[in-house]
Length: 271
DNA sequence: CAACGGACCTGCCTGC
DNA sequence: TGCAGGCAGGTCCGTT
Figure 1 (cartoon, rainbow, N blue to C red):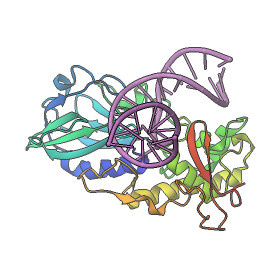
Figure 2: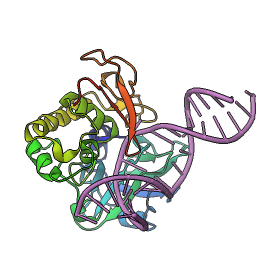
Figure 3: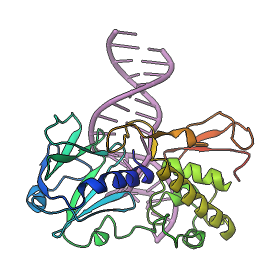
């Protein structure tokens, strides 16, 4: 699933095609996603013009004059622009049929994604209200991570994956950023210096920016919004590379499960 | 409040 | 070949 680079790549991919377009109707084939798709979504959205496609954390925000559609791709979701008459597949759960014959189609085999509607400011929505800063914002800095980590005994990996601390760092890029920063993923978050958090913040920004630049990492079922496969994960330095030599020191890379998530690191480079 | 495990759901791969 | 079991990119929620 989409980590932040895939979500941002999707946003950039669909924005030129949907911005300024009117929604003809919404077709919901399977409302049972992470939360139920609102029953009255069609009534809310029909004839509304999509004024902007924005992103907050891994949520895509399709703004209209009347409200905002909030879309999360979960673990396995993808959004594609298709011909509205094209036969939907088994996991094509929601279509936004647009003026002009195209549809924005949500596919999500695992159904962990979400499609929600809010009339108010989306940043005040319960799911978005408590989110931490965007890592790619100019003012994101290690000083923030250092401040919020004081007194925390949980691992630094779980800290940077906690959306209240910083958003958009998923399981793949958490391992990648910690490798680049030379920080052991299991180290207690509260016992890392400001200088090392500054290095980590820069590593997070760099790894996310590079992945967006490359069009998003593809593992299993992600494909770009237009359907062609994305950039494959050859640029990943540790994720999925258990036992293979570290690109820096040749030491075999380790894998373990931390907080129920696979974690990869170099036992020699990361302290 | 912090930390952890469970939950949601399906597909794919491995090994017996 | 068939099937059970484990694994997968997220993140909210309830329990300690």
